[in-house]
Image 1: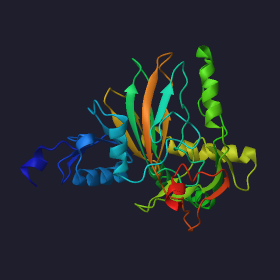
Image 2: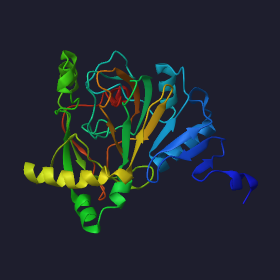
Image 3: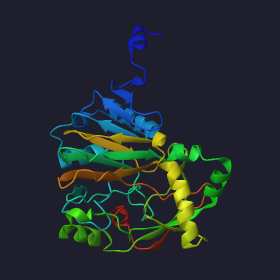
Length: 315
């Protein structure tokens, strides 16, 4: 053991590229220190990716002055960017403005954009305008949740398939602070219907882990009634969101979060009253989920090739 190792705090690893990975939770989350996103070199990008695959969500403090363009450039070093969103137009080709006020927020557990076939691989979120209190985000590790299922539940989950759709009340609103723009946001979100049949358990394409594909875009399970689907969904979803399986982040100006969308769910907590909150999100294109027996997800409704930029690749 070296002198450096003797004096290194427990849970902190210094990578070959010189950045520090400070563990933030037992099952999920790490803070990346000693890195400027806008100036990261190739070795640091490699180490960030390795840390992401292990810890599922990473947090970067002190990234003040980061622009939409710089955020996109950083994200693109991990893969091809998607368009901003399959349905929501915020005036930017690649960056999604995630705004909330009057108590409106995505206060439901979800994995980003599971209603399309090629679920985004990675999301990068930057704080722009923060409320004076509240406005936290919680992430859950869907790989750890699967690993900790009792054997009978794992066997059941391995065989299940579910239909995911964007036709639901995504941006829940606090009726005490009702505003017309909340209705517009929901209408915009569901302006084009998408439905995709996904395995409830997918094999992670980089780590080989099995992860649960659930969240609030789930409409129903194949072969089950609506009542049966609700009960089974709650049983499995509760395993994902068990407190020991989560990490809650209190945002500060200059913060950036990055998560593996193939192995997490997240929840934006609407606890900031009437105050505005604005974030900017960029997503990296993913592949079609594959079940434990090698079958791929199936599109039932909607064409999301433009979102994943497959139309550009084909043309």
